[in-house]
Length: 276
Image (cartoon, one colour):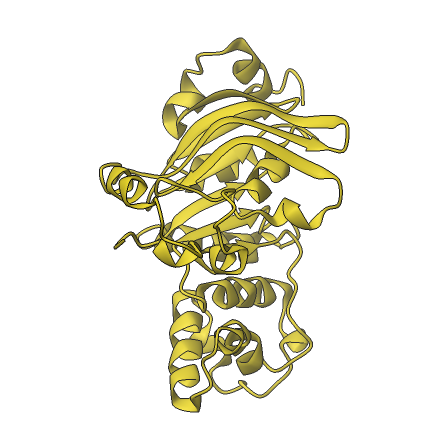
């Protein structure tokens, strides 16, 4: 099987047809179908079916508690670490069901990286923060690690600011620099997809602008899904926007169309500030 995500599957038996189907869906990176999610007995997501295009930015908007972050975490199985959760339906990554028993979750999370709302640098040097993932994956050659670290920091637009500080603690960086460091750390494992859960909500306007510029640049090579409460930010950085309300997907479509001519009244009411 030559599918880009074949390394996620512990066994290749019965996967050939899925790979062929995935290659026929070049414009779709992720597809969810009939997705329901539960925290214990409480249902948080209801029948979410949508496609996420490759090499584009998809923004998830909606009021607090509407299910945006829960949905985001289903895309790399981060909810698995929460006791008592369960999911029904499908999440397909290039045609492969990431909740199938054969999936290697560690490999999945290398391919679908995540950046959280609060920057979370490790209490290590800048170099060791970026090298952490590749080391865990088995890369020990110092020269190779140095190449990965430099490349990741350049892609995260941070290299010029830290290239002479690689042995310093990452904790000494500013908030905006720490968030870009976390993006670089996610890029170091060579993912295809980046999930971002309100990555700029704790940043000042100048740092927010840097992160937004970075997102715009990264979409040339990555599929990006971003949760944001900031509708202006969604309009600025995304190609597709999905509006969630009370655990349901109300509307998804081209960002410009959704913000200027939404199809659903609930979407219009939220965008115009009538609720939320």
